[in-house]
Length: 234
Image (cartoon, rainbow, N blue to C red; front, side, top):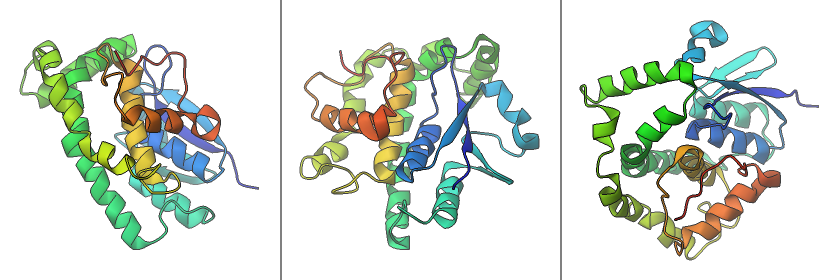
């Protein structure tokens, strides 16, 4: 009988889990039929976990084993619990890694330009000073408010970055083919990140991606459903 796996999740003020990388691990655990215990933490709590070994979440504790980083966790899960593998082959893992890089550089980074101030405003009050200071440092001192200025004008271009997903899903039910897989969980995690904070709806109401998103949020007993989430459509 597998142990209950503890998953440290980055939470905002209302308790929603926000990290897209945590979400992909939550889906991976459900994919494998593994039970998880969610442990919500704030940005400033991360250095207190596992003796400060990790700078970011997700972090899992599986009995005596503590693993950080979503890729390391996925590899650990496949090695330790080989049933229902996340990657059927090394080739599939490599292609999924490519997909992850595309998702980060071409989709998630542009989305940050729309929603980073929303993340700050929804974070736990004790985390907001740290979040502003650290993110504005990465922006060479530009304020979060300036960084998201004219985000409505940039929204159509961000929507266009999702075109490869639309094309792929026009001919198959999941990014991974006939069944959902780790690439689906990666992308769904990005949309759940947006939905946790977005005061500007990301998608148009007729976006064909909504069918896949809704089916994805419904997976594993409605893992991606939370009444605290913001709508993704106008």
